[in-house]
Image 1 (spheres, rainbow, N blue to C red):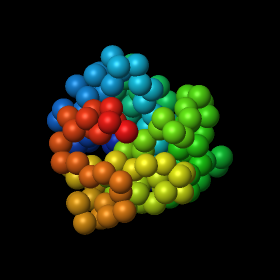
Image 2 (image 1 turned 120 degrees about the vertical axis):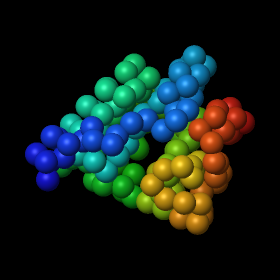
Image 3 (image 1 turned 90 degrees about the vertical axis):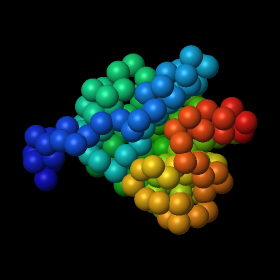
Image 4 (image 1 turned 135 degrees about the vertical axis):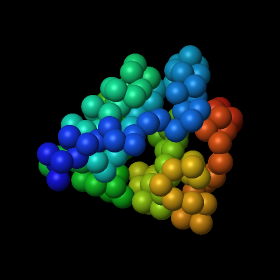
Length: 142
């Protein structure tokens, strides 16, 4: 699977519309940004480098040392590397697994409806939004 995915991971892959602008604005505000994925670690790092050049501070995927979400391992590792404190961290995700991961990491969860799952699968999230630009408003109000 890793070989096949490595050869095909760019097929039909692109940032969601509006995400790059949101990441740039969050960077300008001095926020640190991490990506935690259930994809294997080297793929996560490569995809983030290609699509989010310089906008992501840390990218962590599943590995022998990092259990898959909903285990909080990747999130907690990213926070450790970034020097992030829980009271100043919010988890943004697009699935029920992300909501569970945020809860396991004891973090507020911002669910987004334009990704992997729809609004019904995000029940339990502290916030649910429909547009990438709304991320900034929620993060700055928390």
